[in-house]
Amino acid sequence: MVSHEKKVRIVFTTSHKPSSKLRTFIKELAATIPFSIKINRGKKTLNMLYLEALGMGAKNVVVGLERKGNPSGLVLYSVLEKPLGLRREVLVKISGVSLWREIADAVKPYNPSSIAILLSEEAMEIAEALVKMFNAEPVFSEDEARDFDVLVRIVAKKNIYLVVFENPSTRKVVGPIIKVSGVRFWLEKQ
Image (cartoon, rainbow, N blue to C red; front, side):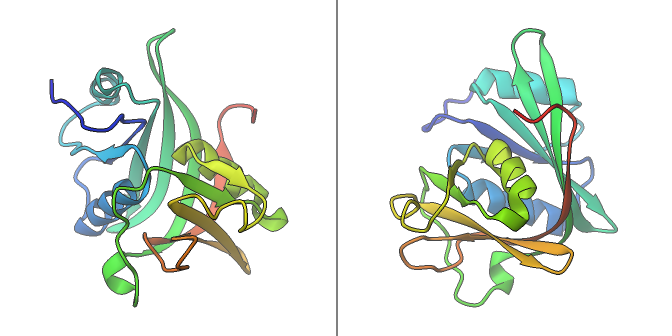
């Protein structure tokens, strides 16, 4: 068993045979979200992913989906101990992403340990899904987010929501920008 220096809460992986853009997107997400790790999917089934996540002590598994070579969604699975297995909870539908290398003045986060999501009326359902997916703290103002390493801001643009990861003190982008077109919950919201 591989020892992990930090406690892993979230395991990021891809669908089978991912495109290079999806692999890079998932790698950047795992670097941006605290206490997360990216693992290569290869031929692993969901049951194999479950066993690996359980062995690491992770609470969530997030699988990146793609369509025509571009990221198209993130599916959140909860790691259950009783009954054993993964429980599908949330799908975040993606219509596009901008990677770090495509964003001017973006900086990579250095080992972030806390993340907050700025709640807004127009994007409450998306914020709720992201809080659950990233084990994030919901905040209602930028002042509340000052002590966090990463702040997730959701900006409404017509029928699309931009999910922007930034450093709350410098306001610089620290992760990929995700264009979210919707969410789907499989379980009742808590």
